Amino acid sequence: MPQHSPDWFTEVEPVVADLLDRHLSMAQEWFPHQYVPWGRGRDYDGPLEGVAWQDAQSALSPVAKSALVLSVLTEENLPVYHHRLAANAPRDDAWTAWLHRWTAEEDRHSTVMLSYIHSTRAVDPVALERARMRYMSAPSGSDDLPSDPLHGLAYVMIQELATRVAHRNTGLHCGESVCARLFARVAQDENLHMVFYRDLYAVLLDLVPDRAMAGLWRAVREFRMPGQAIPGFAEMNARIALAGWFDLEIFHDDVLVPLIKALRVRERAGLGDRGEQSRAELLAHTERLRRTAVRFRERRPVAPAPER
Image (cartoon, rainbow, N blue to C red):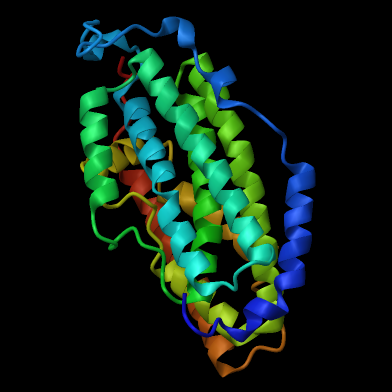
């Protein structure tokens, strides 16, 4: 932990406490074991001398399998974000309580997804475990949270909404009722996480407007979905985008535009030169993303019938 946290951390601690209380009042208790179809499970080969995994054992499409792999591995990597935020925040106050609660809820997501994968034989468990070990053992790099606290909080806010949308769409399109119910449940948690960070960032835009606007602009400009270091990420991510489950247009329409509206980016007064420049660049970048997304959609080949 740095010797000195940014001054605004202490100033917004009462806000964090209120947002945590609100979160706890809204969060609904649920249990991963109730969302896993254990009755489909069979022993695997190995010490238990069960049945080896084969691709034909799951009816999920390649797109759904890619979404499952990226989802579970990015959820597994949440402690990296916890470490970075905790390293900057004061200890033993509402910040700490929130970060522990958030991490515990995210860990529940990886637990339920991994259990679903194993019980339904959705993907190769050996390949998945090897990918997990490579990903989790890699040094901090492309998936690490930005070191600047405002940039980091803005990134997490965007990432939580993007993840909620991605999980929601996986549930809608996966074609399997248990998987759909599981991802819908996880998406509800992600929405509450996003609301916490969004409302906190709105306060920061009031408190330190120029710095917060600059942090938001930098987070949007440099944003990439988590999981970039996952083996095979590019191929799986492209498969998901081409299927229309989560692409640049969805990111623009369902993530970036709603956040800009909720944070009142266009309407905010009292910005200095740095804040005004950051806002102008952010809005111009958003418009460029919209035009690029439309071009991608117009050039996208007609999707074939879902693969099984």
